[in-house]
Image 1 (cartoon, helix red, strand yellow):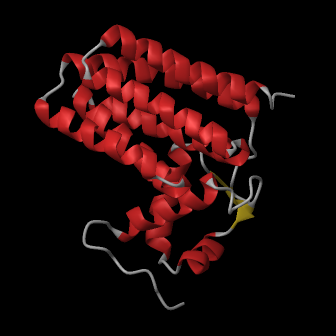
Image 2: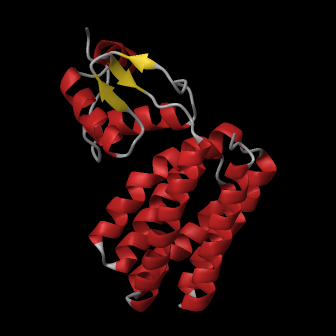
Length: 213
């Protein structure tokens, strides 16, 4: 097969494959419950088998695929599992914002200010990229590498559930909740930031419970 995907200056082929597969899974362009082969994925993306395998290993670490003998399984959407993920997200995000505020630098504040300026103009795909940047900015501000890794490990499945069921009004509500967290961190107000984390996770939990069977 002719390799069509070209390496970008700031990203490896593996990173590009990972991001494209993540996008397809999160937005359910690859349907939950699908079983694919490596060859189907390489043909789909125009990438070589090595970067595809490397990307799949990362995706499996973040629970977006299961690598089985039958093939690459994209898990079904499960509301009960989402509630478990949100318990973890609440705890990690609270530690993240608390550490970020305690260790905040002017560079961190500048990065947060840029994010606040960008949030209102983003569409669905832009907002997913914005969330990646927000996660990186807050994690770097916390000065704790493991916070970033743990947040990434639970984020993908939560996003997939959200984009499967949320409407435009709910997207706007969640943007506002994300903005409130960033503003509280920028203001170095730990109490307010922790309240904002509880509000957004409570919102997600109530959203998910509508789909628990």
